[in-house]
Image: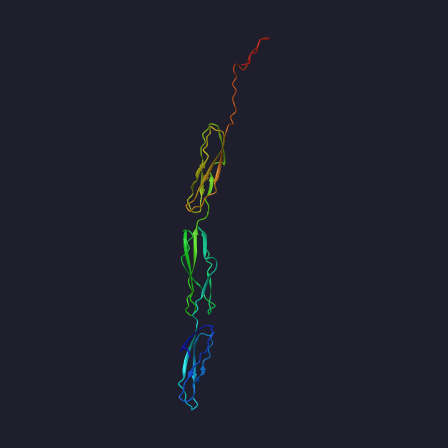
Length: 254
């Protein structure tokens, strides 16, 4: 009754389907089940026998059913850590690995493959994780994406003082600012803000900005330029420094 060969999953349940017989003399019925006892916690091949002897001592030809306890379940891989990991340019990537579960194997190593991470080269890298259990069942490959990126903002440094005082009518000389960055070569920042007019007293704000090639913007730096008048007036006497007035004469203020 049922198939001649039956496959049972490891630790599954084997249900005996039995066998029947017909005879020219005896009534039909069930045959006698013998042979191996199926233990589904032990992989292997089991032989179930079916026999019958009729009431007149005639023996049927023995029938054998083969029961194969097998492991056909694929392991399942689980990443340790995130599926997508971000690594800063020139930073260190630490492989976190992966674990697996399986219905049969308890020990084993997930094989790590795919790209080699070079944190000096921006881009997306794919790390693969694979495992085949001792029964030859392969897990579905798991992939972790590692993105090497530059998220560091450049840093601007003023050339000269943060506050510069310019005398009224004197030309203002822009001293500029430089920047450093973890990815781009250092250079000059972009000058903006107010245009200094030294013929107009007041406070002017000069701005310095830079955005690197990966879109990271530096914190804006501001230089204050104050156009001021600090020169004292000069008095020039009209007339002599010493004037002589005759007694009871008239002094005229020049």
